[in-house]
Length: 115
Length: 108
Image (cartoon, rainbow over all chains, first blue to last red; front, side, top):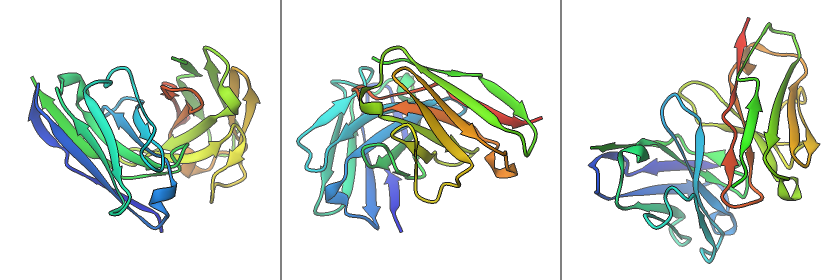
């Protein structure tokens, strides 16, 4: 069974940093694209970033470009999102998802940025 | 970036009725890389459709997707009680990937 478990969320002050992790199991992690998507509670889905299977290709939403960095550790089946220079508008639930078109999703981790 | 506009914002229907949801793109979606997701309160989204019309694993055949270019739709042939939820379209052919604003299907 495919499982994605996010961690690392929490409360941080504006200007601070957080690193989110997503541990994957039940599929060949090293063969799959991975994504981060965020959602303000009660609002819609917003794509954040994606990374290809070997980490050589990354893409970002304009709103996070230059502040967030996606990476992966294929040895430990883990996806990361390093979030720097956090802003109040980055407050959201962050989901990791597997596949080029987000086949499976984790349950999300809440990031709250206080101003 | 490609803007996806979903309509209607809310669809009020009864169980057993047919639901048709629309997703219009501001420019052509490359390679028909268009998907649909279902999200229920307190849950993560679930992939229903990818590549415009391919059902994801385990998705019942009452869900179908169609369209091309800039106009796409998701049809639920007969609504079951568990289908009342919010539905999002997403294009993943051009970076940045984008989602539509969602359509809520509610019980009438």
